[in-house]
Amino acid sequence: MTMIDITLTVNGEKRQFAVSPAGRRSLNCCGEGYKSVKKGCESGDCGACTVVLNGRAVTSCIVFAAKADGGTVLTAEGLETDGKLHPIQEAFLEEGAVQCGYCTPGMEMATYDLLNRNPDPSALEIKEALSGNLCRCTGYVKQVKAVKTAAKKIAGEAK
Amino acid sequence: MPRSQVTNYLRPSSPEEALTLLRDGGKSARYVAGGADVARTLPSDVTTLIDLCAMNLSSIEERPDGIVIGATATLSEVLENGSVAGVCDGVIVDMMRKVGSPLLRNIATIGGTLASAHSWSDVIPLFLVLNAQVTFYNGEYRTLSLADAYAAREELADSIITSVTIPTSTAGDYAAFQKFSRTAYDIALLNCAAYLHIDDGRCSEVRIAAGGTPRLGERLPQAEGVLRGEALNTDTIERAARVARDTTKTADDRRASGEYRKDLVYAGVKRCLEGIAGKVEA
Image 1 (spheres, rainbow over the protein chains, first blue to last red):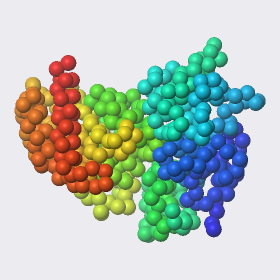
Image 2: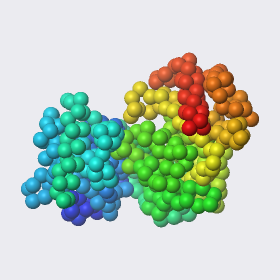
Image 3: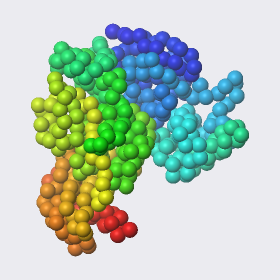
Image 4: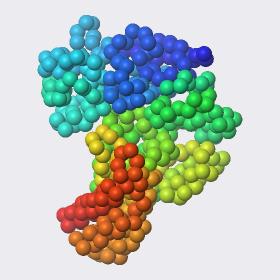
């Protein structure tokens, strides 16, 4: 099978990957490491495979890997620094927004994109931002709370 | 899913280069914009994908003739743009927030959306009533209204959309959009859009469209005729909505019956026009 080489900066580390020319879930990164990028619907509906690509949260299952060539990817593995959880991860834990956990990395990456652009979102804005991330355990109440808490933590750190 | 036969993923830097690649590739080559659609529906006989997103066509600019949206601007970039927000009191923003999820809007492009021409597209009915002009390249650069471009769709099959221009709003311009779907995230069972220019209390320009009927979004000329030259009031709104219901061609599919869709056309047109009437009074 034909393979092509692409270069991605994943969680700050520049890496080369050999991918199929129409390969997707690019950023599952080609099956290596990055276990936070879950396999879900494979059709852009569930959000389990969400990563931040060039600054924006996307369902990576419907992004051709070749399209991302030269780009920058952040996965949930890249959120923590020096073994310390990111405020978004802390907030999800503290608010109990994690049940089975399958949707959690995707939710966190959607939250990361939201809070980058809108540091103090309303409940409606949070629900809209997470509308592409399905959770089958909860009723989304705790995720909304977790995003609010994350926003406060980040604002606190910035002071 | 059948195994992909794709052996080439090309990223041309200009429309000229892209068109040459497509013509060289014949039936086995296919354009990709954001790719969200192609990634899910890639036919097994395609061997070459031609990615149009490396052509530096994603800017959004306000020019004298309108807001020029580059074809590879994502739906999120359109939604978040200040100039776009100024069109008819934010009607494009209202519509765009109802298209899929932010995760999808961060991938899908405006050019890809217009080119893939899905019947349920929320963008198409609104862009039809806003009189959007599509610029494309197929050996030469041409600009057509979106409606004319769709009418000539077969002969434009290898064209590359480079931008879409939305005329700048002026005083007296009003527009509204309505979408019906099972969930906020789902594609439309039916959608409607209306644009009115109100001059001295009367509708001097009227454009109404519906999509997901389940045909490709199209104008509703009979309903428009009810309002043209008339004042917008409870009576004319009711008559226009009834004519829209009675004259729109609808059909059954797995999402909804044609009968139900007729009722949705009535409700959608009525709500669009009532929304505009509310803004005119305010």
